[in-house]
Amino acid sequence: MERRSLYIAIVDDEPSLREAIKGLLGSAGFRALTFASAEEFLNSTERDQIAFLILDIRLPGMSGLDLQRHLAATGYDVPVAFVTSHDDRDGRVRAQALEAGAVALLPKPFSDEQLLTVVKSAVGG
Image (cartoon, rainbow, N blue to C red; front, side, top):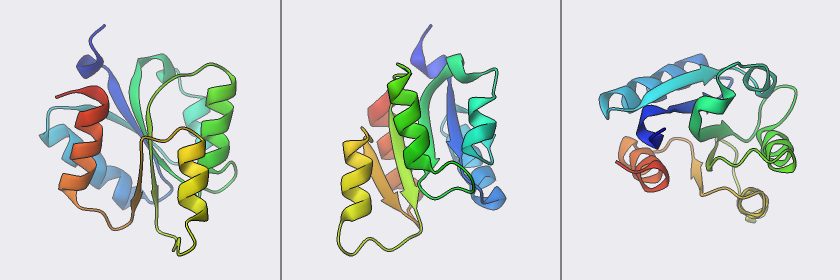
């Protein structure tokens, strides 16, 4: 199956941000699914149809970093871009995200262009 025909998953606890990203991706020709938590994503029946994951680092319950580590440990190999609204002056969060295999770490607020560049480089288009 072509990666472009698959979904981009957005896991973030902010409903307005999830919907804004979904709308942006839709306007660029991508299909997106949204999830309010890591647990909701893990329980999804669409997990095998995900080509790319946009993941908030800080989520209620299981964190985004913990979700990425869990997915990697279970052989779930999908590129991840982390997003965060938390200040990272010492670079610790960035180092953890990249160590976990992230293709990007975008600080909130990020521009539409920044996000689309990351998505397009990971899935094509």
